[in-house]
Image (tube, rainbow, N blue to C red):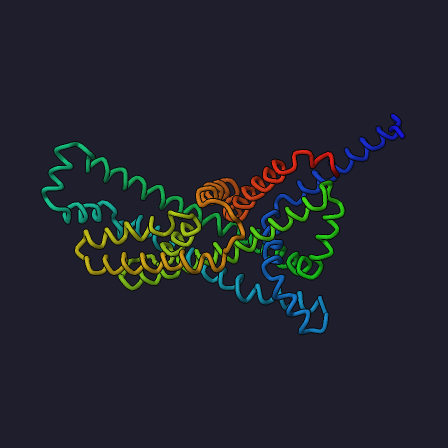
Length: 356
């Protein structure tokens, strides 16, 4: 039986309404996409614990969901808030020290340059590899720009505190319902999906795997590496430990690069300025510790959840950070995984779109 013009017009009109309503609703939620994203991710992460709570509470899903949210608050939200507050204070103190020349990068460079053997200094100077005066001027300018960025960032954080609080409360509110009603929500989405059921199942499985491996794996590993590095910085007497630890935590999310971008130059600085023992202790300890975490803890937590090459994860994470900020830590690998999953399905079954 063919499709009449009137029925075709009705279908097109209905499709337009559905698409328009969906786009409008997505636009309405756009300012809070971060809260929605992290609520969904945390719901996936605590799903196993929530099922245990449901069993312990004799099937009372509401009480179990409330307990799961409270667990997230105690384990994640409160510690993160305390660290963030301390990081803001330390960043402000570093800005003041740089502004008042209590921390003088030019003087530090002079110390490092003086510690280099005279023959090497003469070789560099005679072959015009670098002009030390220009290099020091560039470093001073860079430090000034970074200090200004710190000041601006601290001001922005202060101005955005109310919005940040709204997002956190919204995330926790949504988390409760995602945890309690997540299974039924997923089934509703699956039924409404225009794709073949096996493809929908595949995409949902990949999303869950990426969320778990990114949050439970990569982020936990990064926090562990950042904490170990921060403790060692404190042991050897490097100031602004919390700032460096936060930077190393962020860099630890990048495969093959990691926190060594911070602690390796720090070790070289200690050796060049006469604290050779501290520099060697820092390099050896963090080299062994971070290698152990990468080789033992990361495979244990991440497993084969993402199944992407390291270079793809690296590029996707950097691209996600550049495009979406902190949320890009998850969005970047997620987009990359969805891309490879979609093309894998398409190459295995090119005619799938006509088989619905």
